Image (cartoon, rainbow, N blue to C red; front, side, top):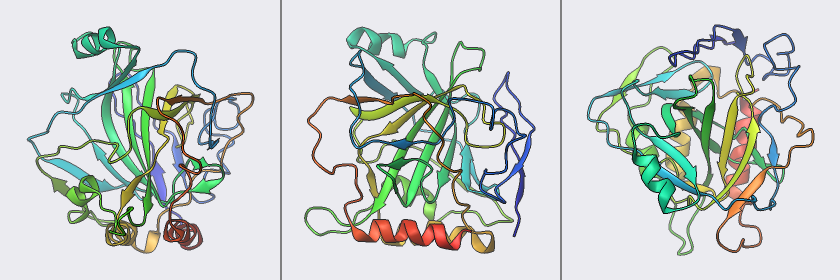
Amino acid sequence: MLVRAIALLTVTGFVSTIAWDYGKNGADWSEEGMCSKGGTQSPVNLPMTAPTALDELTMFLKYPKMDSALTVYHNGNSIAITLPETFRGGFGVGKGSADVEAFQSENADAYRLWQINFHSPSEHTINGHHYPLEVQCHHVMEHSGHKRAGVLSTLYEVGTNGDGIETYSPFIEGIVDKLPTATTKSSVSNFHFTPLGSAGATRYHSYKGSATIGGCMENVDWYVMYDPTSISKVQYVQLFGTMGDAGWKRPRPLQPLFGRHPDGCHHHAVEAGAAIPRSFLSFALAVFSLVFSS
């Protein structure tokens, strides 16, 4: 089934109406915006280790609880949640306590959350490995005229913890029983989450890239968490089944780095193999997604 979509990025000051689809998973977007013309495209393969950024930066998160209901919808390619313009949550990156105080101010140069997208399997890879799920929190940089975007991305794996207990995601659980279908929408109330799950905010890859939908605008600061977080097998199967006959669409092909060197912010020693899926089930589900979404 060929699913057609229109990219409508309705952030104030930036509206794109480029027609695009996942018929060939983005490989045929040569005439779409910057997709075949740019040199800083996304997604990319990220290395197991990366050179530490020259400035040791800390990520500050602020995501207040939303009391009003939010719509969870199915756009034909993935599941998404769009936040209202009034939502004042997001993240910032700085060097220390002074930046923490600046981030709290109304005039801070911070990234405001406006949309959450779910991709299965992951768009980004670590050392060539796709993860079963990637949750991308799309933000717009305040005071940039909405011309600069920031994506905080978390990779999810399926498996068990060190005690042999199956992993679980409270964030995913909050929406998994209210998932939309291809023709209906649903709503989630009391929306309160951390986009990272069990992944820490002190270890992440960062690089300059692009949007991964039609248009491929090269205005995105990507922050991909170094450590994956976890989801249960039941939760993953529920998410996977939501897409119905249309299926989850395979991600856009990995793009060349063209001299880019993703930075790493690792405040703690990196354990060998930390970014590789910890269980065979994780890898098998990722392959399952690729096979059946084509």
